[in-house]
Length: 107
Image: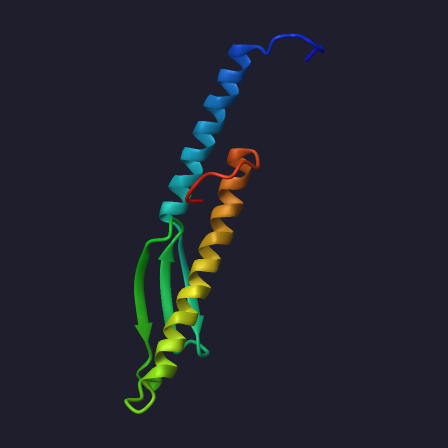
């Protein structure tokens, strides 16, 4: 654009529309994606969608010890953190290109 020239509103609107379509596509892909977080060598597994909705928690019976509940709690928490980190990385990879590097709340 020339110095002092006014921005082309039609071009700006086209870019905004394209960005909106890319964001919608990225959100649809995230909604369909499922990611898994594990802990304890697979004793605890947590499944989460690309949008951050937790779908399931699986606990191997070998991880259950009535005398050591704290370890199981730690494993569940670690698996949740692992799944959430995978979801965050996927969301960044999908939303980053769609938003041109702008940060959107919730992604």
